[in-house]
Image (cartoon, rainbow, N blue to C red):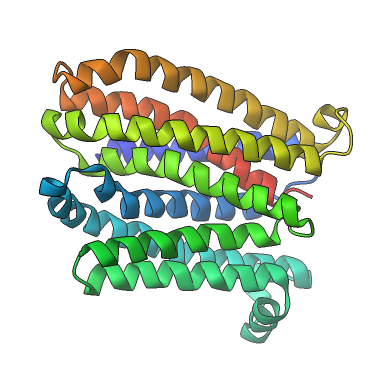
Length: 306
């Protein structure tokens, strides 16, 4: 991915974070939402890069795993740093002190004795484990599976401290929703980062299409269940900051589903038949990822909106 694409991604995330803060005002703090967005996006990409070798045929799987190793190490390192910063920021907010004045003791107490802190520690350990495993362990089938499981555990752990954590059904719905989103969005991001020629797209895109169908179905079911449990009345969708942000996320998700369906109807057959260049496939993926980034940003903002 070029620096131009990276700059575009940063711009999309910044604009989406600002929009989320405006929609949820005064219930949302922009600093906390931005840190959560970076952590969530890095976690999503990490899950995708860990899982993307499984889309390849057995003949080329090891090659794709080696190609994915370097960006996987980088994304997990970013995830680790973002989670550390997020833990410090949230600890400072809980202690009602500026971030620059929060001490190690305060952060440690928060991390060990609060649900939010402990879930953050699990995410930190997961990100560190993925990074170390990717850098030091051979990219065997067992290592790939272990990396996928560790990354998924880190993503799920952070939902334990969300608004629905006090509800077993709600907490499970949020965790499943987050994992389904991570698979759908993360694997597509991983394809952009690792697939470089038309033949690869022809092999992996049909498998991704099947994977995304299942992920989207799970995402929608879990998301609807979580929203029903969280909202006390439909009027909250426009009378509360959380509701407005949730409604905006629903609109973005609907748009994303329409775009994904159009790609499935046109792009997928062409790619399978080797009629689409690698650059065109990458550009189509980037367009879809831009909308996904907005949805992930809104989801991150929801997690920190009171």
